[in-house]
Amino acid sequence: MWDIAVGGHIKTGESPLNAASRELEEELGLNINQYEVEEAGKTQEVLNNGGVYSREVVTIYIIYADIDLDNISLQTDEVSKVGWFTKEKLNQIIEKGKAIPHGKEYEILNSQLNQPSRLVLSHQTKKNS
Image 1 (cartoon, helix red, strand yellow):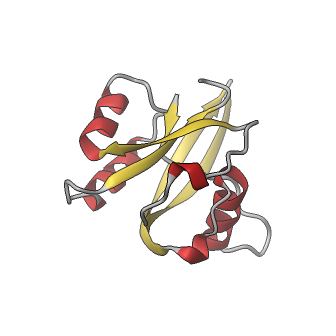
Image 2: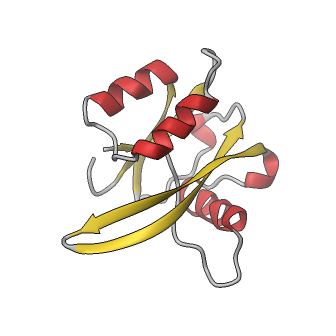
C-alpha cells in the first residue's frame, strides 16, 4: 500500500512540526530544516484497529523541494520504497484502493497541489507492500 505521509505520535512537550521533523528524519533520512515547509491544514481522524478506536488530530505539512530519491535513506522496517507521483497518478492510486485511506488528508493535499507540475513523494509501507 502507498502512503502520502510520514508520521507518528507527538511526544510529550513536542510540537506537531517537531514531531513531523523527527518522523521525516527517522523514516526517510531527510532533515526538514533544508526545505520550505508549509502547514496545509488539520483534520480529525478516527481509526479502528480491530475494534479499538482512537481519535487523533492530524496536522498536514507540505515540503516544497526537489529531492533526489537516491538521497533518501529508508527506515526499512516501516518503508519499502518511495516514488514521485503527479497529482493525477496519485489520485489514480487512491481510486484503485492501492493507498492507505486518508480521505480528509487527500482532500487537503489535492487542494494544495493545484499546479500540474508539482509532484508528490509517496512511500510504500513495509507491512502492506
